[in-house]
Length: 315
Length: 270
Image (cartoon, rainbow over all chains, first blue to last red; front, side):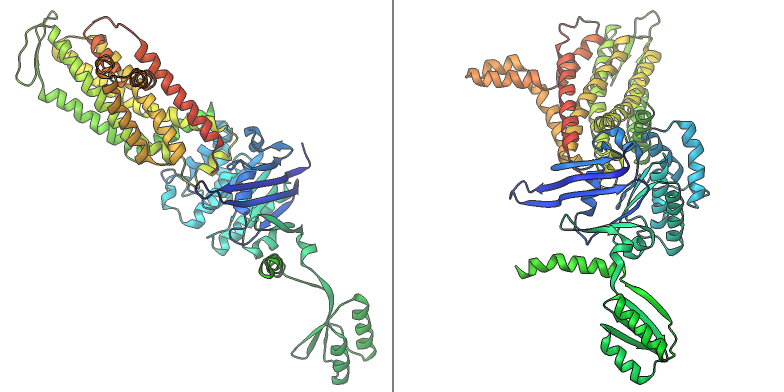
């Protein structure tokens, strides 16, 4: 089996209007490699092409060009989809089913025999905290959060090696989110690849190791969360800095803030930051912290999206 | 096999939940009750049955079969019409956004998904048609002592006719996601085919050979809803069936339309 859970090569999906013949490139030449066992987040503003990418990946939409493979197999082959568990964004589970019968139905479609389904369903229901209601309560009576949780259980029914989740914690309360995150963390530890399509950046930052930001159908930025949020400078924090030294250091720093009696300085290079530390120590000042500056994923996201908009506005 | 059974069971479950099954069942039961209480069928033991329907009182056993053939015809058209109304929504429900994506993500071919749903739908209707025809046959038999098998066999033609019309519903659903359009197209076929069945009369009325050719193409291509009803009548009256062409050409039409539906479903983006 391939070491790549997901591999797309020049994946393109173009929608053409029947009447005006106008083309919309929803996914434009996307080549993405998601290693097996990783936790990968796909980010992008609304209409960027994230959901279309997922649909092409799952063969719900046929690509105009390029290919999509899961564990080395073309996803247009039904057998390739056996290793995928999927939770769609705006899912519409049959409201006439109970949680139990829904899991049983989708489990059967995933190729599970009835004995395995009977064994697996109570396990999953306990994991998502719905074991009591799932027997008799129809899905039409479920809250949004309960539907998300039972939807996640549906995706996990056949113990897939790749989990594709479209906005998994959408509409879920903080406790439910924590529950979902715990389930996903346990799966990650078991080596399941988790691919999350979300606009909840904090969620992605908290859970995913790698991300790709997609904008206008193209991958605008991809890499590990750690690398992408790594800032270019170094920060030094020191309390009770004498006024004359404060003036000198703020003159050298790229950026500074003073909260209470603590001075926070940001320098361009490590050398500059070290010189500042030397100076502070020479003046008997204590060092509160010394660290490489970091950005939040949200900052990286906004910067990337703005940057890809810039050439358009200049034009 | 597991997946096919699951798809069939899901269609039944949805038919129950949407009251489609029970609505159909209720209509069938109403027809049976009508047959049971509104008809007065007197019996002379020994097969010499004397049915009395609506006040008329023929005195030969053959008239029982005659009555049966009329009832069978009514059940054939009424059963098919009810089934078409009941099924249009069931097919399209599968294509709802948020539902179809999840089905397509499963390790099943698209053909398997569509045919599973189709088969489930046919079985939902078959259950009701068998109930209706068997119930009517039982009522007739108990009241008249005439137990002709032709009436029972008529259910086969009703189910065949519906199965073929359902392929049209499936194709329209795959193309346009519209139950209303599916019903309209299916009823248009049901209305046109009795007219086309008068092919020999119409041919004489047409002046140009090309018009006659178009008529022949339409007649031989479209399902023979009307011809099948005539076959039912012949079977019940123990008359010989001259040609089985209406059966196989109707089945062929259904197979072709279903194949186009599957092909289109395979290429569709959701």
